[in-house]
Length: 379
Image (cartoon, rainbow, N blue to C red):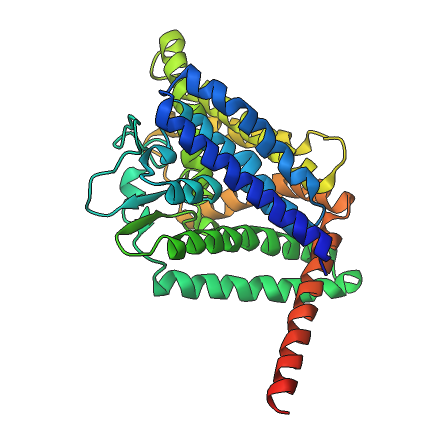
């Protein structure tokens, strides 16, 4: 089980993060958007990046690294220039929650309220990659975690629990089955973790009148790479990357290459930066020198996505494969590249074993507490 010293460090990390975000909110009240505000935020970027290094537990350092070093820093970068989800935060509490959690909360049927002395652009908030709005409009947000979504999350939690239990029998399992367990734990575990954070923010903010943008849209049903990366997988990061990286780079490329070709280098660059961020995340919980395998995975995915876009543009409607074939090819390509480039770096350094041990430790701790509670209640 995580010792008390580690838990104190975890609390210190988040207390420090909240203090830094309060500072950013206060700065925004008196410093206009642009280079001046960015200069005031630069020390915060550094501190948020180093705070998770004080933790060693996989299940504590991973969310801290993702939420603070990655997501929060990118949101603050956008906020420096008066855009992004933080530009619609009317009070300090909502500012802190939106900055530190993988959520974008908007008022339903009401105009966005601007923080003091801020100039926001409420309408400039594309949600995904190009040409996806019509397919995602009905699933882009919800005023509450509805029953259907909760049932799906419960089913995925059961799958993860069974996969963790089955991992105890790893020595007697076929290697392909072990990789399938890895995939289930990571694929569904990430979605479950982000859903918990979103529900936490939704509950703290009082629920009524708020809209939560969707984070995932059943990525296992993807029928193309564009569908997977732009419309289904980790949409919170997709939205942030589109605003912070893709849109600015595409605007520059339009001037040099024209509108027809501009999206291709912007896509490659966005996936490359995504790969570097994932490589940094791996360092937080592996603590070894990067091998750049993780970065290579995302560069390859970006290249394949560009090829897919070119093929769609050239072929048009003349060739439409069956959706089952498209689904099989899409998930097959993802699996064949993810296993050697994402899975091996983690298993090579024992991250999988460490994570499973921590899961068992938490489960045993909870069972022991429940047993004592039942014993005390029955006399």
